[in-house]
Image (cartoon, rainbow, N blue to C red):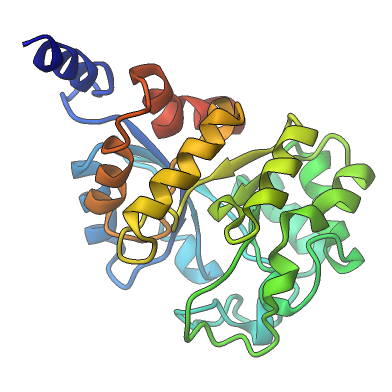
Length: 280
């Protein structure tokens, strides 16, 4: 009876005003059926998203009464395409959008964050000087930056992809060059878990999302549980954020809910509170 009572209290504490779970999905991409995608997310408790996709499709993602939309900027786009979906990133087919154009879009509030930063797919470090002008704009306008770390799935269409360029420790030069930059590491850095933890502990301003790690279709639930337990034991609970990366929203949410070592407060932080603080 005691366990049942605690479970009921926990369930209601994470609910939104409509009685469902309250979720901020910080890692989302475009879909062939955007309206269906967004409706499904809202029906499963997602009230805010950070989405990045091809620039033309990006403009179709607009906030509604049910879902608040933050829009990002893919950069660079290897061979001018979005990995996996293989759409042209920009109408002109370029890999790197012009800096003055990007700044104008920021001023027009069409870009809320820089990301997903795809330097790894391009075959270069996240601290390569080619990406520095975009970091400089992010710092100037106080925009969050989401950097792809870790590995990648098959058939992404980027022949220059280098897994070693997904090591989170490569970001050190960037953080030294741009000390006010607000950065989150995507995918929890896997398989570079040690390097990820070292970076998070060394730079207390770094945040991270757990997308892909929480997808049971990609990562074994036991492995996800072990990694999350390590993150919590290392004191990172205030800087971990939920992301689905277009995985099944029900499965990615359930995988987090099933971690019985997380307290109610820790679960709320990961589902939305940490993201609200990071994205301001």
